Length: 214
Image (cartoon, rainbow, N blue to C red):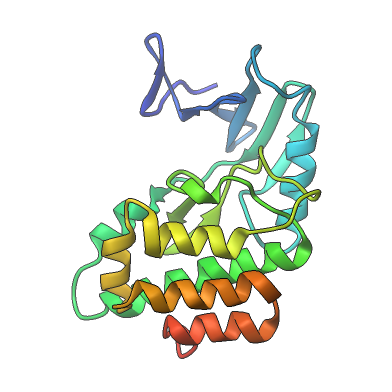
């Protein structure tokens, strides 16, 4: 294990700490991976469900690659990311609007794929550490609270956080070029009611993302 990272347990640096697990960098052969270690006070019996749901997301090109697991350990692809809010703040120059629209389009497309699959992430209402950016490409990570047994709300919760009520919403709306919150809310209500291709396309149109080439 490699004890480096912004979070700390005592004097040891780690990648992160949550209610279910702590995350450290780990070397397996010549590959650096992220190792999630289940906390002794976690409210989960093991890491198998998170592994299975992450693998399910991986099948449609979403999330850090799930490598293997035991009862108390989950090994994942290590990604060197920046948080979405920091990425938005870093945008400069004449292409910043196009870049902001592109990444929002990619995020919503990933959320749409999860909605269609029936997999609800469960933590996108506060996605600060759950949607991150690697080389300009968004990753939805941390499927520890995901479920196939509830109504998926990935598109609506992610869009509401990014554009309506989250820490980054004012900045994101300005970068994307969305002036009226009411327009976004109306399109999200329509999508929430039907979850149809038509309502999703309408949401993209209202956000002016339908012209973005991916």
